[in-house]
Amino acid sequence: MAATAKISISVADPDLLAWARRRSRESGRSLSALFTDAIRLERQMEARAQFLAAEGPEGRATPAEMAAIRAEWIAPAAAAPRPYAARPIAASRSRAAAKRSR
Image (tube, rainbow, N blue to C red; front, side, top):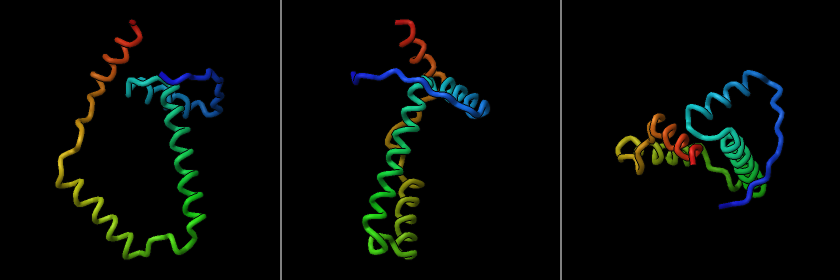
């Protein structure tokens, strides 16, 4: 198990905090896990932006190439079965409850 650091986060927007709490509850994940995922996503977006900046215009796909990429991504998703089944929320909640009771 990875070591964790306890920090304090302030959320100025009460609607945003309410959404985060609701999302956490509905997904069966902790609020900390939700914020960790958001930070991880932000780091990935930063890395993508740095990569694209380093590649310059030569590294960007043309509109025709982008259309081909989108067609390739969309076509298999509609035809192929999902590699995993989505977990029902109730199952997620019961697993989260079981973890808390340990």
